[in-house]
Image (cartoon, rainbow, N blue to C red; front, side, top):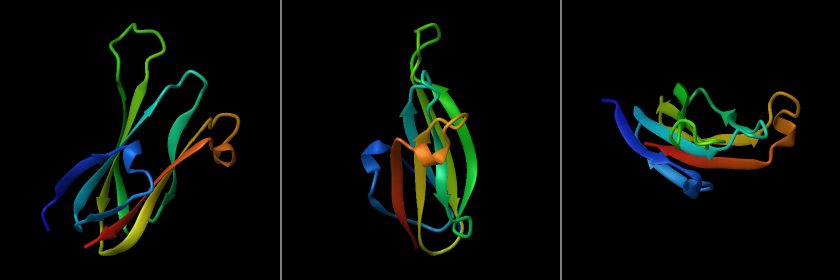
Length: 112
């Protein structure tokens, strides 16, 4: 099956069930400010159904704009048909870890 790119999922998609095709690329974009050391991290991913293809961080504001909000962008490729999900957590990894997650993002995927 040819690789296809889906629309980006954002915080507005949190908790939704999404239907996608096998071989499709799913992109998640989550905004963050890194002032207090917080960041978004994958906390639940079934690698039998999904591969993390890329992870990048983009600036939202121009250089020199003070504490610049960032956009974390993760791209996943679906591998086989079935039901799975992606769960992300926002926490400070350097001294608190995932057990101190302040916010979650998750989507349920039906891969057809």
